[in-house]
Amino acid sequence: MITTLDVTVPAQLTLALVPDLVLMGGAMILLVWSALRPESDAHQRSVGVASIILAGITMVLVLAWANRYDAGPGPIAVDNFRWLVDIIVLLGTVFAIALSMDDNMRNGIRAAESHVLILLASSGMMLLAGARDLIIVFLGIELMSVAVYALAGLNRRSERSAEGALKYFLLGAFSTAFLLYGIALVYGATGTTNLQLIGGRVAMFALAGSPLLVAGVALMLIGFGFKVALVPFHMWAPDVYDGAPSAVTAYMAASVKAAAFAAFIRVWLEAFPYSYSAWHGALAGLAIITMIVGNAIGLQQRNIKRLLAYSSIAHAGYLMVAIAAASFQGSSAMLFYLLVYTLATFGAFAVVVALTRDGQEAVMIEDLTGLWSVRPWLAFAMAVLMLALLGFPIFGGAGFFAKWYVLEAALQAPVPQTTLAIVLVLTTVVSAGYYLYVVMVMFMRARPDGMPAPERAGGLTRMVLAITVVLILVLGVVPNGVANLARAGRPRIDVDPTLTTLPRRISTAPPDTAPRVADARAAEPNR
Amino acid sequence: MLPEALFFSAVLFVIGVFGVLIRRNAIIVFMCVELMLNAVNLTFIAFAQVYGVAGQVFVFFVMTVAAAEAAVGLAIIIALFRHRQTVNLQNINLLKG
Image (cartoon, rainbow over all chains, first blue to last red; front, side, top):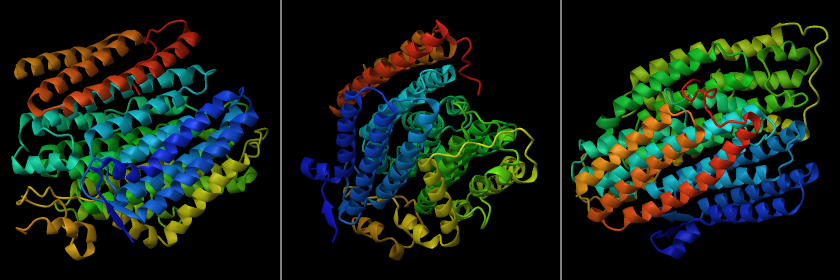
């Protein structure tokens, strides 16, 4: 039984936000608790366990709410897209906290509040997942970013960590200013900050070509480009990923990117579908150079964390292809991709955490030489994760299907994105150069004498590794269930009832497969 | 009135952008970012005269968030200062990956 909420009424809006509020409130209580006791390893671990439990409770609430509520137009979306992004984010949160519990022990970090900062950043991400108003988009991005700035500088003894945090902070604030200026200009062009009203007014008053709107969209593109690390706005990513503790890097590379992309695609699908011609060229161009440059520089990396940083830049390029498709099929493909990418990234960083020795965490690829002979399971897991990031069929599990759905969405888009699809395939082949190199080093080179075997990884690290690898392999065999969920997880587009004629819809999806669009169509008597 | 305000805020924003890209002192770079945010605030207020209160509400959010960001940012700058005894960004090439 699904109840439809009216999120313009404060009480019902609160009801729609209950999972987010529980996470925020719980994080506040945990923050007080973490500050009450002196720093110690035991306290750090117990706050970590409580944080994981809180994230679990929030996930249960999200599942309950997903089956119970639904909402019309308003500042917060209550649709399957939001719930699925919430689940991807919370999964990432649990992994990040579990990994940082082990990683903190190894690096001698005793700050219990690191877990709470992850929870606070996650509540910002959940806000982003449901944001349907530019004010909420801004608040979500800032809530997420401010917590992650602090997380990047978590290792106070490390100069690289502090330097990475400063770089992240300055460029993050810089990009926020661009995003905000873009929002201000879009507000100036349309007179509203609500995504659907923006979309409606652009169509109604034929604003697509207005200089104010075009400038606003361009500035917002730059702002989002910084947040998701698109070339040429990617310069911060390798240094920050390298400097931050591995668990936090995994969180930045996977969950922060997932949430930013979720907000990105919602803004673009709901607010700017009718200015397609204004942004499509720029967006496709960014996607192409991101895929090419990310993979080309990735080939030269010999440090695993920097390699994964460039790999995450390249993946941002692949995800841009899904946005450039400008269809619901694209947003569904993106959801599936984000899930697989989150699993693979956390798995790969779990291997990095497992290889950390005496606080020396920046592992070079050479440190993996002959890993097969000393830690066969670790080498096996890393091989699966690398193949998943590459998008290899069967052995790479769901990684192949993630890329497949994005390609399918690009080619079946209302305006087929053939060039982007070709670049995606070619750059994927290039990326084999570094992903397979890692696998080759682990399996085909003899381990040099006197090279110590890595210490046995912590229990939580092994658990994260096992879960990610098993899920990737299982999804590689039976992707249909999750793919169908992703297909149902499209953003809900309600049409402003004052608009009776619309030039064209953004999706070519047949109406019988789109139950939620169907009621929007009912509001358009002229169709 | 509106064109003048928009022009002025655009000029302020561009000054802020150049400041971030050119200056080498972390504190001054941060001040330039704040300048950019305030240029945006001016734009919002200018548009709020045309469209009503929503733009002014946005300004309050921006100011609050900027204050929170400043707290975290200055803490990060102090953390780096403890390692380096300087806040100069000479060695932190912001535009080189």
